[in-house]
Image 1: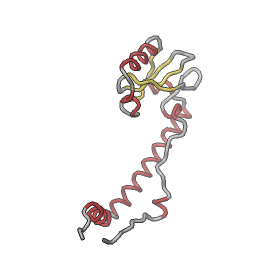
Image 2: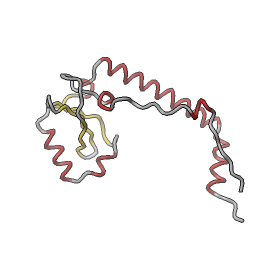
Image 3: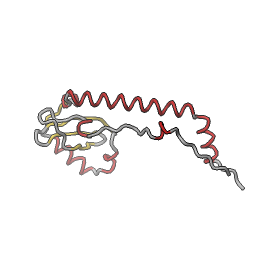
Image 4: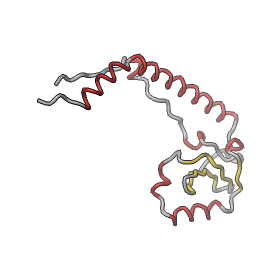
Length: 140
């Protein structure tokens, strides 16, 4: 069996997916102090919060897999913790600098995804051939 090694051009191989910097700033922050303590799961829903100012904001569902490992008691404890918090929209907890950083991140990520897609499209035939040989080796 022939081994085929697919090597991406340097500009693709050295082009890692952009990652947001600080998870707190990426998912919003307290409009009072500009911080985010952590997040809690209530079911699949993720809530970031500021303990000091008792402010919480919903950032989405099923973004992080951590909810799957939590027990019913964990989820009840999380819901009870946020029960006394003021709920705001995520956009209320984002400073103008964070909005700008988030938009720049989205633009970098979109450009990266487009470059990856173009490379995969250009090399689709080679990739299919490689995968079929690796998945269906010729018996001796």
